[in-house]
Amino acid sequence: MAESPSTRVAPPGSGSAERLDRQTIVLGLVIVSGTVMAILDTTIVNVALETLGRDFDTGLSTIQWVITGYMLAMGTVIPLTGWAVDRFGGRRVWMTSIVLFVLGSALSGLAWNIESLIVFRVLQGLGGGMLMPTGMAILTMAAGPRRLGRIMSIIGVPMLLGPVLGPVLGGWLVEDVDWRWIFFVNLPVGALALALAWWKVPHDHGEHRASAFDVRGLVLLPPGFVLLIYGLSTATSHGGFGDAATLGWLAAGVVLVGLFALHSLSRGERALIDVRLFADRTFATASAAVFFVGIALMGSMLLIPLYYQTGRGEGAFAAGLLLAPQGLGAATAMPLAGVITDKLGAGRIVPFGIVLLVLGTVPFALVQADTSYWLLGSALFVRGLGLGCTMMPTMSAALTTLRREVVSRASSTLNIIVQLGGSVGTALLAVILSQQISDRIPQASGGGAGGGGLGRIPAQAREQVAPKLADAFGHTFWVALALTAVLIIPALLLPRHGAHARDGERGAVPFE
Image 1 (cartoon, rainbow, N blue to C red):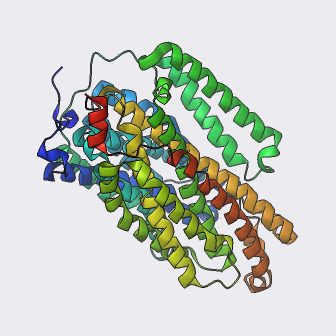
Image 2 (spheres, rainbow, N blue to C red; image 1 turned 45 degrees about the vertical axis):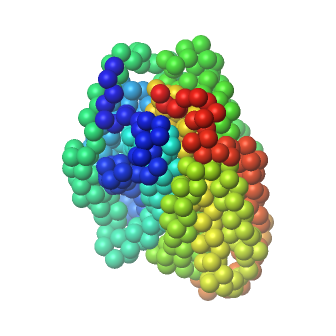
């Protein structure tokens, strides 16, 4: 079958293997224009929950499904993306995802009650869940194995900046415009992304000879993933991981995922996800690292803004601004990290990034009621440098040793792992924080999902309980630091040589 422009790989020794050409850079920016919507939307709604509850006259236990439904929909559709790209081609799947996301955004902004908003957010999540893995697959095929680090640095910037910019943009829109515009803002961005995709994403028609769709895998894996995420989300409001209902949801999810693993072993490459990919040591090692990166990134995005808002009394918009140094650090480090990954291997840059992550977390673990914002801002910048040296180099390392025909499905697998890691980090740290606050401030134990009921503490009383709040957050940050430090184990096993050395050792170019 002839290669399409989107899947052509630069041959060994060609000049284009050394640096990204203009066409590939433009393609990367086109993909970023679409992925930035979905990434921003994972956090932009968080600051609007109180306003939504007031407007729709409903409680937090119901309002939280505006976020949970979106995340569950994203997790459900990710496993389908690899098969869809193989079957229909990246361009078609990419543009369909944008249309679904924009449609869901428009309907969410027009929602007339909480039930309609939750349903429309699910539709939005179905489109958003396909954007990142499809974009990664398109760019991976276009860049070739020797330039994965560089191209991943381009697409990784919105992945790390989104959780920082989302609360800032959301806080501004909720406070100064209207909450409906946190959804309507996606319409012009989506229209631009669709026009750019029509213009610049190469035509490819997929492999029509691809195997039949894995229906049994669809019945097992996405529901298993949904049950796991749902179980983790209930842990923050039903007594933690010891609650019988939470354990039941988690156990059901584990059973379904286990059954899928057995099914995948028997079906092989025809499965929704081929679990034999993990037989590749580099892919398995990088997958473990990506899981803990998800914990470090999304867990911190729960704790840090919550500390600023509840521990220090800042508003949502101010808390978002205080997070900006982390995004700046990530944007600073990612281009350099991509070059180092391509030349020297991920194993030489990722451990350094983990050290930076740990150092940047220490001031939060030692936080006091009056810790300087300058110190915390500097620590966040260091954390951002660490994230920039960790996430995308790890993901690019996972793909460089795989055959080209499995790259799209491998990309989907990595995105699932990041999502699962982020969910574990968020649920676990929320449970720990809630328990720590309840132990230190009993009057706060009556409400608030994952926040120990901080909303019930009057503002004038916050000064009295501030030291206890700082202790609770500090203890939780120590746990986050330990989960981050675990990353060093898989990181030390990542490749310590660049693409050129790897080609010489293998005697062939990956993906071919």
